Image 1 (cartoon, one colour):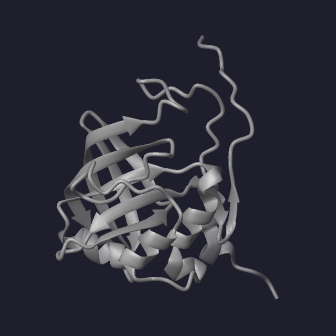
Image 2: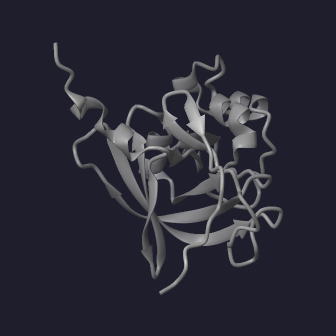
Image 3: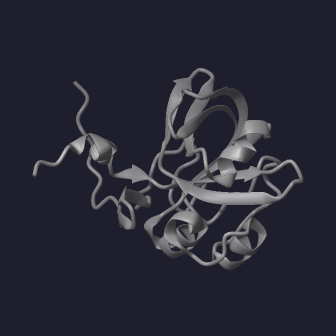
Length: 189
């Protein structure tokens, strides 16, 4: 029997940072989940593209929400981040308000009108939605333009450069996570 790697080909793109995506539904209920499918797609203006599984509440929120937040967690926040991924991690609390209360992370619900952020992590972004795409797959795509950025001065300088090894939380696959072990600068030519 031969194995066809196409069904798990996305694993070759790992590890990826497990970003926390904050949203609010139409009633204003906040939610926060880990998502590793996010990338910068423009630097002028600053924009990011986010792909979220269509069966998740966050995808439903993104269909109507004016924006979303992105928090960059560290390995030290693994337990709380994993709890926020309740539908995937099997954490028994999936209702957003209770899940946020029980995740164990310090949440800030005031800094962005788009959703909660976690100010004890590496930093966060507040993004206004500028486009939504459905390419027919199991994820919906949302593009957001960054309106606000905050860097945690414990880890980053005011212009976002790391002060040392930052240890972002990175998902390898499923419940396997890793982080950076060293930082090296390559010489400019």
